[in-house]
Image (cartoon, rainbow, N blue to C red; front, side, top):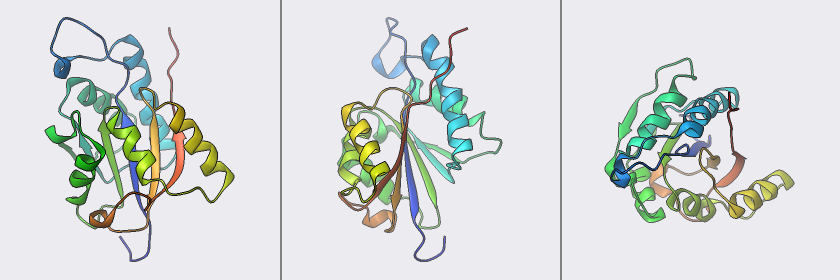
Length: 178
């Protein structure tokens, strides 16, 4: 990564899960999640947001979301499964991010709400363009399943702090029922 170039932090909330009689950590994706997760992967590919590294919660629904999304990227991406991402608060997520090597230009976190939504809102500084304002407003209303927030981060991962990034995109990719 060259000096002065922005890093990108991409936040992907897991796709819609099912609610069988299992522990929360073991909940699988539901039918809608199985449709939406590959669409999220295509969105990442088409938006040129293919990560250099993925850090994924250890929960089954996040692992399944990543597997289906990754299959759409057309390239292998290193992934770390980190139990700290499951049910994490924004401060805990920042700690995980701070451990990422400086040469990683685009980092993808696959996790859960409310942590991802709160992290995105916290990191995003005051908008400087109409598109940023609109993205922040949509994200602030709801960060639904399969939502993707893209933040430009002009500082090293270790220095990422509230107000230090720009929300450059917010999307909610959806598949269609068959």
